[in-house]
Length: 42
Image 1 (tube, rainbow, N blue to C red):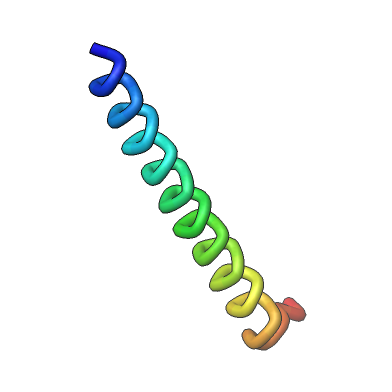
Image 2: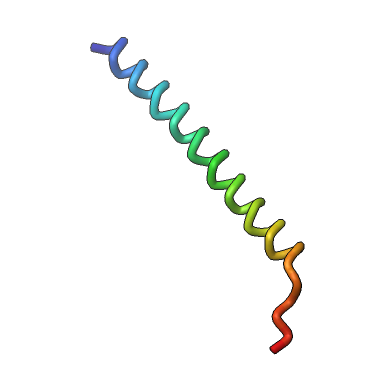
């Protein structure tokens, strides 16, 4: 039982790290897009 909980905690930890990396990459891409597109001066 304890082994299953440890495995579950490990899987959840890995999922959290992956989610954080994906979120960070999306934010970085959005900032890069904003910085490199022409401003809308209308």
